[in-house]
Image 1 (cartoon, rainbow, N blue to C red):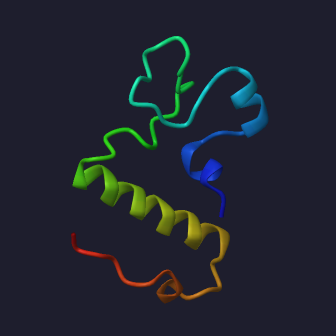
Image 2 (cartoon, helix red, strand yellow):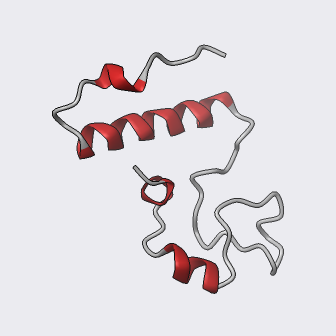
Length: 78
């Protein structure tokens, strides 16, 4: 699985060439545009992090339906 698949970036090269970054604390500055990617927003919020973990699990199940989910390991409760 690639992070691009989770964040919704279709062509990472073109995305970067357009001056975008996947995450920036300064997403509103002209130099650091996130280009519509919000996957990494709210990185300090437990709820947002839990949603990201669930997104990884969903994508894994979609891409590898014959593999057991246990391969991903247990979730941390921190």
